[in-house]
Length: 113
Length: 115
Image 1: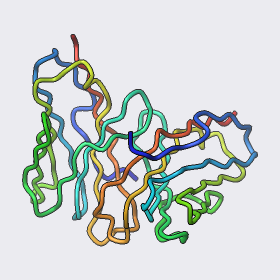
Image 2 (image 1 turned 90 degrees about the horizontal axis):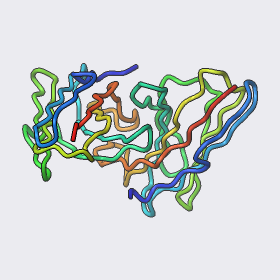
Image 3 (image 1 turned 90 degrees about the vertical axis):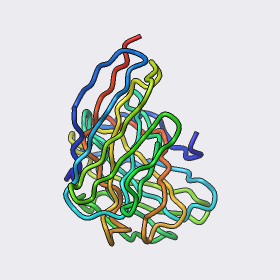
């Protein structure tokens, strides 16, 4: 079953604008990861945030984690056409090392040139 | 590039047949996980192998089985294929995943179509 839910399901913005995607999950977690997927191909790891971290940055990406609300957000600043893709959050539940990652259904992001 | 490769890229099978998908992990990665991604959905965890033994499994029937070899290659086998098995199959490798706090690196996937 899918634990996480991304919101919105789809997002279309102009190039140069910022894009924000949200993720909610249900169980306690070790970490939360964000992935990008282009056109139904493999997943590209973007960023991992551990349960004891609240914010993390990587280039134009900023991720926040609120474990009390069981939610995370991914902000992409100064978007580019190449950012067009589906974005997934995935959680690793506490004590569930051998249970794999639990993914949401993803947010489909379209950057209009 | 993640250094994880999968073969074949695409595969078409008939209902009832058997299929083997292959994955080559990054050198040194002792853990490989397999995921099934149906169209429009997020990936779902099938199972995980650590040092050639299955040590975790998602909600998939026994006709989904796997093998992991010492040379960092692995296989996903699916018997008695059903139409609903049509999906993108992804493998992911990580360093050491008993606690799975490491990043998982995904391959490009194998798209399986069952007719």
